[in-house]
Image (cartoon, rainbow, N blue to C red):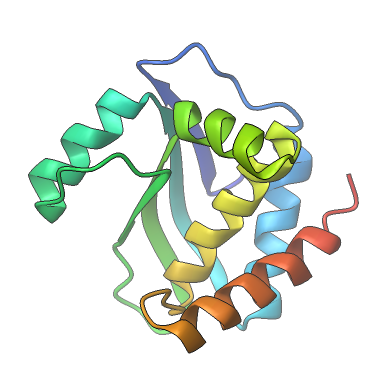
Length: 141
């Protein structure tokens, strides 16, 4: 049984290729020196994620992802990742990429946050994008 769980809240979206995605996330985390403890990835609407953003982060803006790191043990990833399917679809249109590719980019972005990567400064953002591109290229599906 995998320790990566997928849920949908306030959206009809259902992830395809769950087994392949779990394997990809697990191998990406392992390449960063981490094991998967327990990760929940929740696909939701803009409004649902906006409420989380307001309640927990005091941000009154739409976003594509919010990641909560619940890790307590070195090298073991535990967390909750909330992803707005509305934002993913809009960003895919804006950037001219496939919705599935944008979704996978945001998913690995959340995993990289759990691995300790940030995205606040110019150098952090550049490294995050480099890591996203690297792991996206290794998907194999």
